[in-house]
Picture 1 (spheres, helix red, strand yellow):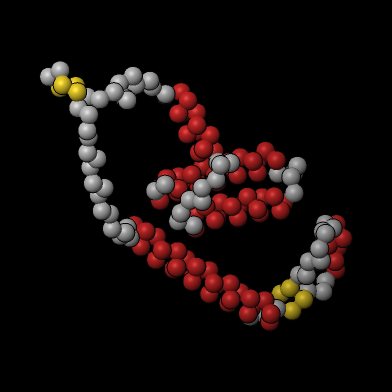
Picture 2: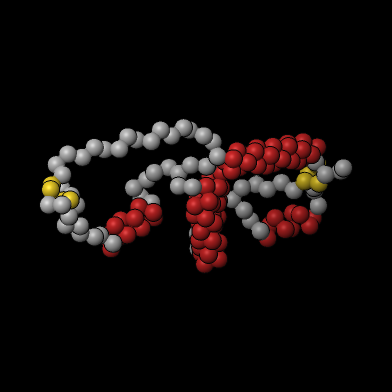
Length: 161
């Protein structure tokens, strides 16, 4: 599967997630959407396809094979030239292919590295800032937290920088 095909399949997956989210936002747990977005992220970041028998592509290929099956009656018969049967055939030598890395794949890996580095640095800076932030203790925050109960404790903090 080429890189463009995999990117297209990831785009289709993203559109499906957006449609599912719009339709089932209040009916499914929020963690479901996190998992789906994680799958889409992995699909975009991993530059190779993992073969699986439970793939939509396997269903598509199976249907294509069944719909476009062609019977070739002469496939097993020897070729005839001037009323002479050819009984021996030689198979062509396999072509030697060398494993080269595509320039598009190299550019993709460079882009992946730059994006990963950018987000890592941004995360570390925000984490450092968060550690220096002080908890907010006001009536408004307490009232808001009472009106909006959550499963886990959320702490509101304010940065002084």
